[in-house]
View 1 (cartoon, rainbow, N blue to C red):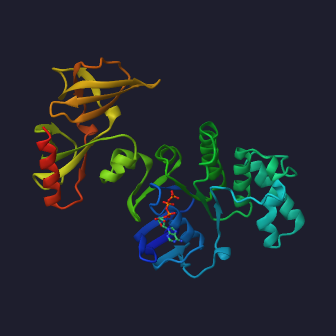
View 2: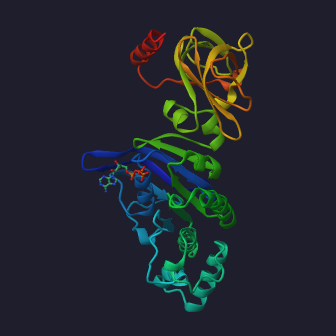
View 3: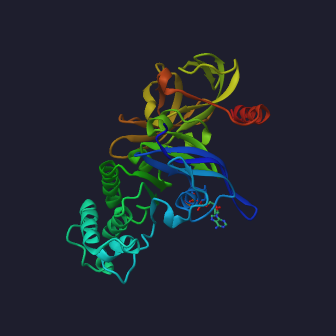
Length: 363
Ligand SMILES: Nc1ncnc2c1ncn2[C@@H]1O[C@H](COP(=O)(O)OP(=O)(O)OP(=O)(O)O)[C@@H](O)[C@H]1O
């Protein structure tokens, strides 16, 4: 028996001529914290609206707990949404806002009071029930919105950029609290954000979306360490992305030099893209490095130095190092075979050759 609470099968969404989602397929496992991550306009909110039942897909099927729900209206789905602007009722106090959904369902007063109290306790707003919404801070309103969304224990909670209105410190605090709340309640959360650090910090699973298609799904570690394509490598964290050729299993050529790597199974001489994260590069003496570079810039960031350097072909490398270096110095870059991440190239060989040629002509 599958433990999936939500499934999309070949879901497409079109507004007029504008195709916003293209043949989306995914499964959401019950009880986990999922994040939909992608740039503005990629289709994240459109997916949430389909899950919540605010819109119907142009084609494809949506399943909830194994049942097809395309035609089930929003108010009959066991799904609640926390919106970016919270959508609280300003003329009601905190308790009335939280109680609203229960009253609509006709839950008795004593039961409603009990559940409102419990929900306010879960979001650490004990005793705030009689307060006017207008007398609550941004962070407190955020908690009220969450209390209102969990009070009737939905099976699935959708959070659309739910933390984006908070300042940085409060936002980081709420990330931890939301994660704890999700574990405590065991409700499946689908959280939408365009902030990659937030996604990496909070999620069990991340789905990266761009231009209406899912680029990669996986745990934060999978996605960070093994990006499937250029978009993911570039979008998640900082990266050095360079074209290369897979000479043989475990051997890749970058900039005309051969490097041992841990990837295999590509065609001999297959064109690839190579990702090396800035924190995986160590600075050493010029004669000890695998590549020789000249340091261009160095910025101290508290925990480390953010360094840029040019190699002999004038390509820029980003390096994060805890050791200080000197601008203008010639140094070596050291890295291990497992720090090289090889990605298949997903464009035609002709396009790739053209790009590789132009890259080499830059020399
Ligand atoms: N009702 C609609 N009618 C026409 N176009 C729409 C409609 N809803 C969304 N779109 C378009 O669909 C695309 C995806 O929008 P969506 O809101 O899903 O993106 P998003 O990833 O949530 O972006 P953001 O992070 O900016 O909220 C955009 O180009 C948007 O203009």
